[in-house]
Amino acid sequence: EVQLSESGGGLVQPGGSLRLSCAASGFIFKNYAMNWVRQAPGKGLEWVSGISGPGDGTFFADSVQGRFSISRDNSDNMLYLQLNNLRAADTAFYYCARDLAHGGSTTFDYWGHGTLVTVSS
Amino acid sequence: EIVLTQSPAFQSVSPKETVTITCRASQNIGGSLHWYQQKPNRPPKLLINYASQSFSGVPSRFSGSGSGTEFTLTINSLEVEDAATYYCQQSSSSQITFGQGTRLDLK
Image 1 (spheres, rainbow over the protein chains, first blue to last red):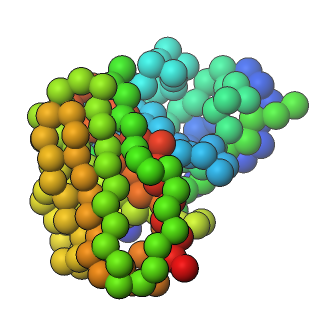
Image 2 (tube, each protein chain N blue to C red):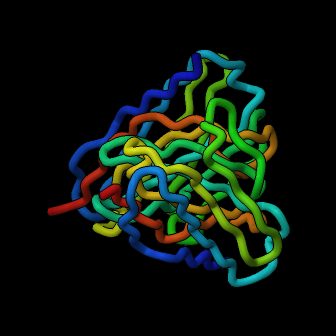
């Protein structure tokens, strides 16, 4: 059974940093691209970032380019999102999502339950 | 950025009715359009990928069609459990985008 479990969310001040983690199990992790998708409370979905299966390709939404970075550890089945220079507009639930593809971000077939990031002073 | 516009934004329907949700893309995206269902306080679930391919385990009453700039999600013989918000998403561009969502209430 595919399982994705996010952690690392919390309250952070504007300009601060946070690192989100996603633990994956139930599938061959290195064979799938992985993504982060966020949802502000009561709002719609926004794709944030993706990473290829081997980790040699990374992709970012324009809204986070230069502030967020994505990485993965295929030996440990872990996905990470480093959030820097956070803004109030980054407040959201952050979901880890598996991609149907190996090489890049396409469509998201399994999702974690999300971790809440709140940016506020 | 490719903008996806869903209609309607909200619909109230009765069980056993058929509902159609439309997703229009601001430019040609071929068949790179996917549909998700999200219930309150739950993560989204993939229903349809590449416009018309049903994801594993999705009930047959859900179907998708379309290409280019206009796509539809059809739900036949609605059940109470289908009350949710539905989103379309495109993967034609490296900047992946979602529609704003269609909330479906069951009467």
